[in-house]
Image 1: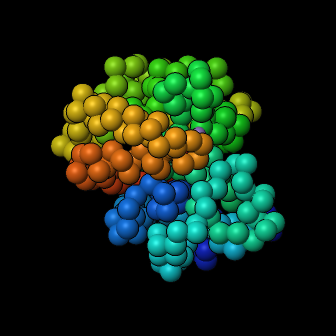
Image 2: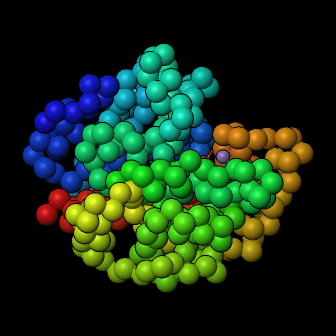
Image 3: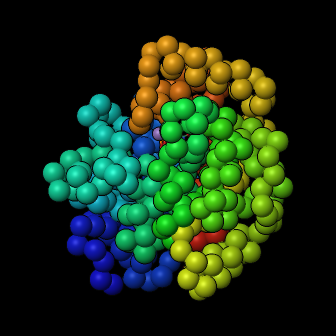
Length: 304
Ligand code: PSU
Ligand code: MN
């Protein structure tokens, strides 16, 4: 298969591509900026194993010395997890990182771009970026949303975190024509909790049906992705009101410290983890695993 010359595809992923096995792309910003050490390495390896246990091949994506890596070695994951110099690479950073031979982890937007170049259709993450609270003043809207409207990749996530304005995030996705599907839920999950109070457009109860929607969308040449929202399993969920309080506190801190731009999401995640004494991190780990398993099932049906 002829792939883009900027890509370095791991032999196991290449083999899976050639033999048409299901593949699940995974992002790496969660390793470098989304979680503390050593939980970041453990989670990254564990999520890859979850994909394998569900009969698909994991492909964690990052940029190492300007090469677009599709499938990482353990050494590369360790590098991303421990090196403070690792940049958070979004769509706007991608060409610069490649041409200047920089290293960085990929967000949802850049992971989608690279997955698409590598012909991988399904991608699992924890949470997507969205419209931030107060965006009417700050204009802080994640590039992830725009990417979902452009790039043909199915993104499986646990909904939108309450660090975002969940209602505005849904409005933005509607404007951009991105279908939002609730897996076995009629309500958009709020990341740490299974419910947000906002409805999804469609509830779909099987991976098979999701794969069929994907195929149909792209057969119809309707460009862009599909957002599958998968609620955190009940036993691991945190109470919405408690999380909201922690998030409010974190946002006040961020304001005080004048945190802006690409720093805000990592800052809030780590602050919330501090305030909840690790409860949010544990929930985060459990929900990613849950998303990886669903993504593998969707990828399997999509390949059929
Ligand atoms: N949400 C999380 N953990 C994360 C991210 C989001 O719970 O690590 C990362 C993802 O890589 C996402 C990015 O694409 O943050 C969004 O950043 P921003 O809000 O700056 O667009
Ligand atoms: Mn932003």
